[in-house]
Image 1 (cartoon, helix red, strand yellow):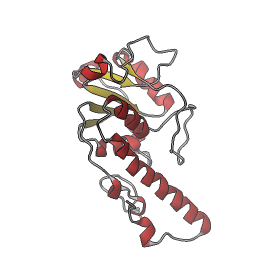
Image 2 (cartoon, one colour):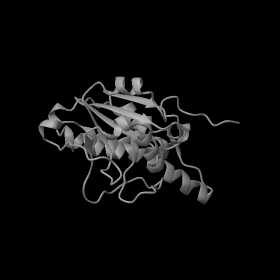
Image 3 (cartoon, one colour):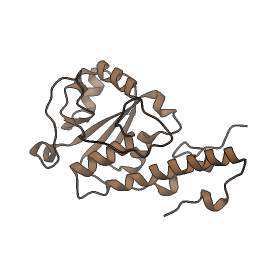
Image 4 (tube, one colour):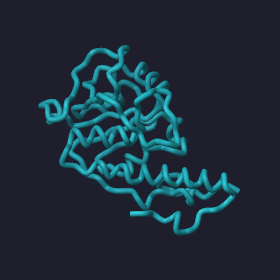
Length: 208
């Protein structure tokens, strides 16, 4: 029998995190371009971010036509991505700078590192956008999924960190609520399966 899933978060009902979803407005629009494999992944943090950000759009595609991408990039945009050696040199958008104040849209690629690299190669237009990136050591709470790249964050953690820097007056740290709830529920479920016990109703309810 197929498991019942939540129509909103797409997670099985016993690990649904929707009771912790928040609605966060922003001046800067967040465009999430999600690889199709991520859409089907059980720990889909790109969708989670979209559910929380009222000024956001989620586009699922590995490849977009130049016409479609140009339409999506009509607002003044910057790409949230590390400034890696193989990428072209472009302007960095720094918090509090005139470029930051003029920014209208933050573009996020929601994919594994390998797939995100392929998506960038398929879309030179994205490579040449001004870039938002982080410096220093990053600490991720993504204990249920491992990255192939050191010092990296999940999509929702990256968005929260970037938007918090670009719009300091916002409430973007609230994005961690559903993320931490999802991680906690999954770890609890894993521990339960290991012990042969089942979680109580209280443990499945949201904790504020």
